[in-house]
Length: 128
Image 1 (tube, rainbow, N blue to C red):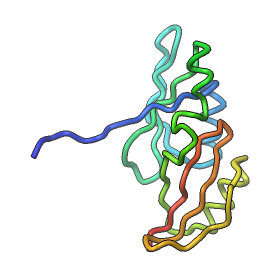
Image 2: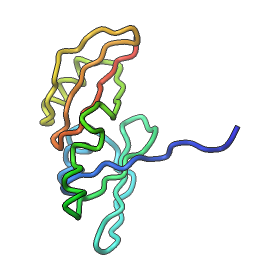
Image 3: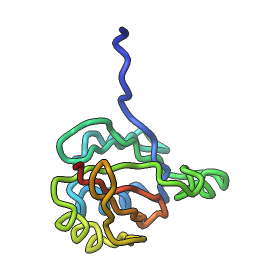
Image 4: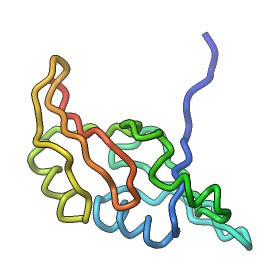
């Protein structure tokens, strides 16, 4: 066994402050770090309750701008767990995200696919 663990993933966004407003102010994610590094910032957030961090990276090049909302190549690639899917579906909707479907029952729990304002596809999962 090693001491390896996934510490963070990068999420490409159009603007740091717009992303912070959505994730932290509207959804209640924790701001872990926001360090000005001159031409860019080191901004990390985490869902309430901890776990892996998300590094928000502002798109600076045309290729990076094209990747906004398409890092998962059209697939769900981000997974957010909840203990109350109805409560958090309302929170996420009120924050400006769009649910692609009503919550559905699966063998592992209740799940619904949603898109954040940047086009990223997420699963909201209430484990069974």
